Amino acid sequence: MIRLFPQRGGWLEVVCGPMFSGKSEELIRRLRRAEIAGQRALIVKPHIDSRYDIGHVVSHAGAKMRAVAVSRPEDIPGLADGYDAVGIDEVQFFTPEIVLVIDVLVARGARVVAAGLDQDFRGRPFGAMPELLCRAEILDKLQAVCHRCGGPATMTQRLVDGAPAPADGATIVVGALDSYEARCRSCHEIAEPALAAPILAEA
Ligand code: ADP
Ligand code: MG
Ligand code: ZN
Image 1 (cartoon, rainbow, N blue to C red):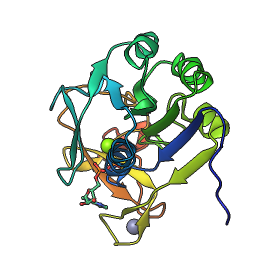
Image 2: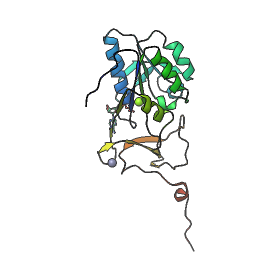
Image 3: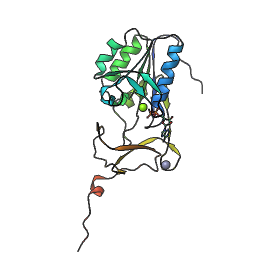
Image 4: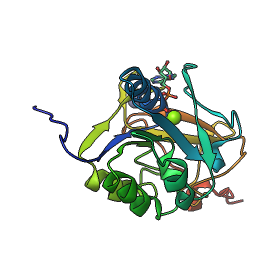
């Protein structure tokens, strides 16, 4: 495979994959390298994900870089003015306007690196990700390690009290005590709403 970066103007790189696949680590690595190269680099993330550390992107392994939490995609062009490289973490949480906003940044000549979940916990496309994957000049789909079998994981398992979450659960549950695992396709489970209901034994 030959991968060439555009020589004129801006471009979009997308880094996708399930939880624990190293998206935030990769985003931090790319933006750090841009800084080392003397470029002005900025990371933004949606405000929804600012429960842990509002001023940073923090990876599951502890890698950390300063970041600005924003509520609306429309706030990004003003913040990112004058930056050569703009990282966006958890991009799937933004409203669909993020697609046009990224177009604006790229048209201004910025290198945009957008990291996010390609699938929700059901395995369906997440938010604006399909549109971003199509528009990207450069795309990487990372794999995690399946928590069940140790194989390559491409999906995110939501667990409620240790059991697979039902398909009719909300896609985004802020502050919930649900837990998540990376799983491969064959270990990934979704509880059907009907099957999850208690079945009464006949007397
Ligand atoms: P993401 O942003 O995709 O959720 P992070 O960059 O935050 O991922 O975290 C990646 C790190 O998580 C890995 O480098 C590894 O140290 C750790 N990790 C924990 N569980 C797993 C797993 N099941 N598969 C891969 N990495 C894991
Ligand atoms: Mg992450
Ligand atoms: Zn598995």
